[in-house]
Length: 400
Ligand code: AMP
Image (cartoon, rainbow, N blue to C red):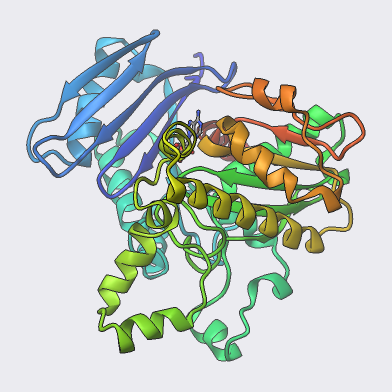
């Protein structure tokens, strides 16, 4: 009998569910989709299939289970259900327990539940996706791929905070790092571009999207990353503040009478590009406002963002023994020639110098080295986290 050749990749958020059906042999995405505004009457599912986009309204109770049931009907109508080999789930937090993909069973689900205290917004949503997929595809194996896993190689000096050490020992308070599948993917891809094995290569990867993190990868392994105990640490992001003086939190609570819940919302949802610009969390919208409408705060937000990204790259260079290349990825990293140019301008001491023409060309899914001839290489590489999840799911199950 011929083995089924597709992996269904599921990435569940609290009110969204993204999926891709990927052929493991040729890396092609056969179908992808996004269920949005779940748990509300406006819930919808958008499907991309055979170069066409279709919108589907979801039935009550408008939840993740309904998305998966609708997806199963669509897959069935296209005779694609029998060709699914397994399901790979993105799970945000694997704590210190999972440095590798794992076959999901009752014990693994209990552990992901236990780790929810480290990622209260994400892990419970991932568990909902797992439960919904198990119900719809009881015959299929399911694998969890953790965002934190790639960073489990960080040395102690990178992940221990300068807090009383027992907080780490007793409460797992340490740096974890996130976006691991993306950093892993682009660090592998840049090795191919540079024609060197990953074991001989040291790079810094900058995943700049709505969430942003920057990672130092030495010989294929993460050795430090800008995000920390939570995805709030590091550079400013779409709506997250990134690292700030923790004293500001006390000031907001004690002097300005904000509750801790309010401070949480401010730091996670009202800061970053949105907070500074007072306009939008979207880099594209801010570039438009800054350069077409001469909006001062939009410009300031972009300038602070670029400066923080550059400082983070420079500081992460201290964790490497050599620096072969910098890689930009994520929605901003892949598309914003303005941000890339601004970031590299701050990094001339590290011998980065941008080639403006190459920088303009590397957009909309195009890879390319955007550096001048004699400068240190800087690559733009579109990320593909779904492919990593599909590939690792397949590898785990076929190596058993
Ligand atoms: P992601 O979370 O990876 O989907 O990235 C989302 C971010 O990428 C948003 O801030 C978008 O504004 C930004 N982005 C996408 N396309 C462009 C573009 N052409 N120019 C500038 N920023 C872009």
